[in-house]
Image 1 (cartoon, rainbow, N blue to C red):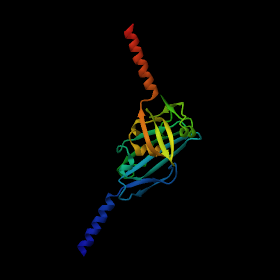
Image 2: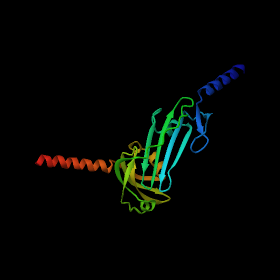
Image 3: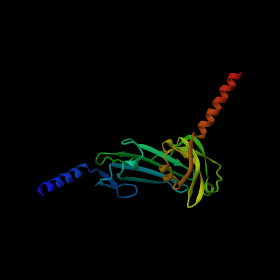
Length: 212
């Protein structure tokens, strides 16, 4: 009996020693956070700064939490930024996941909202997205280096989706669905228009020069 009790106490001490402490936010902008003991299922600390730009005022949120490695979707200890821009709505995130006690205490910078010179086709409004009548050109921002196009479904309604996206989101369906807020039927990523146009002009110029 004493041996069993000793084994149980040892296991409990080892469990406590291996549990991770992370900072957790107490409000939306995380002006106040506290260190907590994470559950055994949480193996990383996570900090995330997000910006949401819509036709109304932009909003910024900061989240710090205990998390699982699978929910991070980015390399450990590397600050990673990703973004999706549909013109009428842009959502961008700056994240880092780490594995030492309270390593998520620092707050990350707000994702870049400056235009980067690249352009993609887009929809002017959610109504145009649902109607499939999208004919505007969107200036990409920050890390958005690719165009995307495709269709999604939500509440049995299909919508055309067009805009700018960071390449590190392409191919990660769970992340794309979370950003789009709908089930994906098909989403394809490609080079931005500005790059395509530049390539065409370069080929044309080289061909013209060869004919002179």
